[in-house]
Length: 578
Image (cartoon, rainbow, N blue to C red; front, side, top):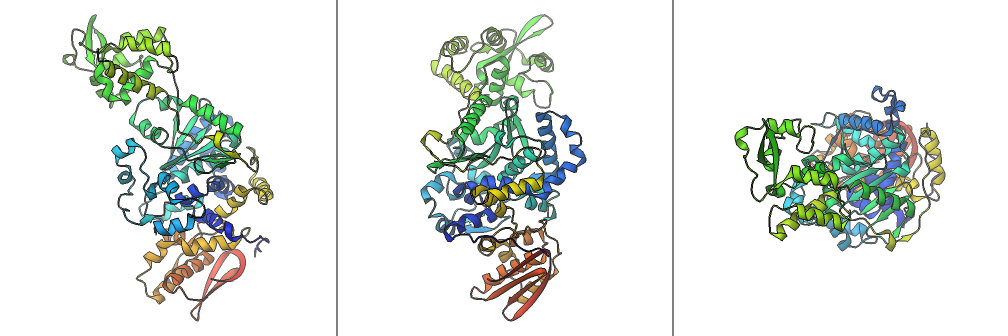
């Protein structure tokens, strides 16, 4: 039998934040940015991620260089997790209910400008995409909105028990926090080199390794990939190109676009900004010009490409060359294979003379080879403009140049640290190679002075070392799925339904599932089932008196003169009235 540690009660003015560490909705993380890194730490403490170290896939990982390790991790995540964007997974709430919760912390205008559930639609790029429809948000056009929740590692793993899922799953914040924890535990990447980036519609990480690596849901983007001009890369760029970055966080703290205070180390944020700027900036070369034309196809009409066939010059509209890239290993942008690509194209597609009013990509390539161009060098840009002679229309010419500059240099809209009041508790100084128990003991030692470390134990759902009040507040207020799915069940059937669920928790040790996790994954420890049943009963009978008694391996739930007994493997002791 496990006895709970003596844990201080959570003050009422902190209860909303601490209960949000349990439910971890997208909006809760936006309002309480400490939660983003707390979930990373919860995943680092999870026994699940430490089991990965014994997997055959990671054998001999210690012999690999950092980027090779990261690639190995990427494939493991792709094989074991799907990207889940089912907004109905965690049920529905209302705008009024959420604003009432968050009114003491942030006004509605700030939330609506930065949160997709409250009307945010991004810049003009997203209007053309109809981004709310793209994410399935358009069906929530009244005061009803979905809980857009972030999953813990355990909940991600548990998706394999859910109908129509073959492996684990999670949404973008779940995957970014999982990646951050795994990069540290599995790949030995220092925490100070892992930066979490949140925008209103996305969450990803920047890893300070080599030229930089960006995680994007399950996949990785390197600097070379960032500039390859493919559709996949364009989607990976979407958040940084078209959204305000609302939160940047690492082990030194966070910075948030709305709040005047920041806890991140200025030196750490400066490093991040410098490295991200270098990652999203490159020189203009032949390869980059060709990649630009692949990505911005509207400019292809200004270009042609020369090909020597049997010793004779031939000219091809560049858009025809790009159309042949599909299904071919050869690329226009790769000078080593471009001729092979052109050799696959029928001769009747070519012109025997240069096409009027189009610049020759080959000629421009020769110029760029001897005259490298940087976007911040006015003289070199002027020289390039003179070479783009496809038209006498200066507006058209400048449109091409402006598009090219935009392609080879992105200046992400980051929070401005210069305007922030810097006041943080200091870095969380975990080191690669530390053992799990060593990490847990270190974080326990920080709990009294470091809110992020304290919240990590709540995000991990460990009721042996946390106040139960936040967990129960979240369980009884923000778990609508189990209530909705059992609404038509008579009381007797309801009792039997929970009593018959497999006595199997998705969480290890003394970590406890929320009611909707019990229902979604159709399994739960006796303590978890008892809390889920209490949640449903209180929804049906708000004035009911319910008593919960956890006594080691036995849990008793008393309601309406009835007593229900459950077996528990959690070994927790608690007696309380709900």
